Length: 289
Image (cartoon, rainbow, N blue to C red; front, side):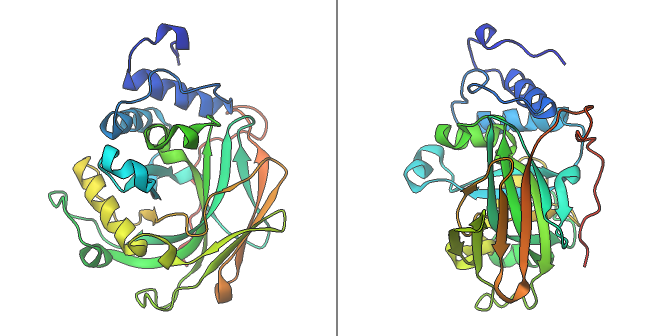
């Protein structure tokens, strides 16, 4: 894969930016800055994302939804930002901590999440969704942990246009237990996050603007508008309920979900593809319980 140098990029080129991000992720190599001109708006940023999805050697297992800061929503004409989650980066929580591959010099964080699994294909022609309509397509809810990650350490500092460009700043999803009676929005479990056993934040589904159903409706509309209506079996992670908690290689994380138990993770230094211990992007078993 040939990646243009930063010096050679004098104007925005979606494919050039996508090539640079994909190459950096596959090589587990950090980027010193945004690789080229920053997209002028979210439409350009999603053009980068689409190009990167086409370059990535895996298929989309689902999507993450993240909040856009209030002060930027009017300028960007959106309340949320989205990005793909790939099959090889969906893990099922077990008794041992789930390894999270952190790119040295890049960005990495854990986020407590409430995750929907879609039960049937959404119609391709429907572009506008309400939360109530969206929930009719859900078969199950899980608690989980989004592994936010990028080769670009300043991705969140640069803002949503950078986030959208690099897979929505997603590097994986850890699925935990299912949520019983998940349609009862008054009875969702709270969450607390710890990094190296130090308290990092707490929240609940109510911490998310519009709750998980609002995030789902936004995603279904956005994906349909991109010609990617949600499919049965896809996962939707609805937002950082307890906040965004930075993590470095060697650190551990524990996300507790009340009576549903907890998910434990350990950050490890990512390896380049093809190196011993490197990712082969093979499809992982996904929790179906």
